[in-house]
Image (cartoon, rainbow, N blue to C red):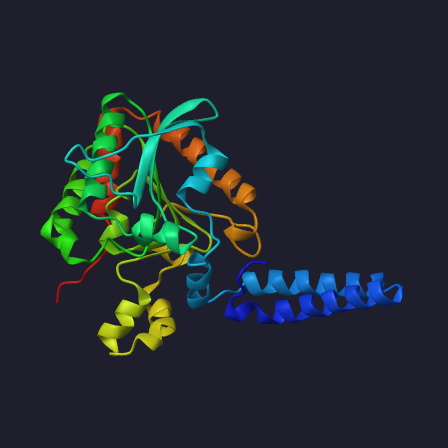
Length: 318
């Protein structure tokens, strides 16, 4: 059974009643099928109602669900013939970023993303999805390879942020991300970025300077984590729910500000409930975007990308 989130407890109470009735039915031989069907419909109605009115802080919990699909789950469901390409050619292979060549419905792509684990061992291998400079340099190497050979680029992003440790600062974390921002803006091929879970700060942006940026329905994209924001503004990380509301981190808010280009629907209950369905929705979005962007000349593609990011934000002069 999937981990139960706080706000899902009303659904779980109904599920417990269903299991109890099934147990009694099995032990006594009595027929409770009608009652079970009624409770199952109640659970489904409750789930749909709940998931159609989620608060940003609740979406935050879904984005961080321990069973949410990770990069390789999506690759396995979307791509054929994935060949991972390792290393930054300076002596490191940061496992927090994975990338390689693949095909989507027979079309070649370079697919790159941040990688989280689902167990303690995996999270240690992938550094909890927090890349170091070597990871961004590996990604940049793959970006340039794709640009040279006219291969569209897809990035899948799920990271709480770039690794904040001393080793990362010593090897120029800020510089590695900054170079990626500059070089991604100059790529000659279509770039599609999808935030699949957490999209925090420059750690996410280092893979997201793209022609099209999409968010999964229950993912979030923000300049700082709600906990970090609450710690700065109120000196109290427990006010993260208030910060999540204020930061406007969800797909619908970000679309209003033209930060992202669209929202990709998830199954009711979140992406962790049906990997195949959410992957199919992502695959369609990727292919439609490649078709649209491939019609542009290289000059128009880069100019459109530049203008997309140049117009973000607004200010008033007094």
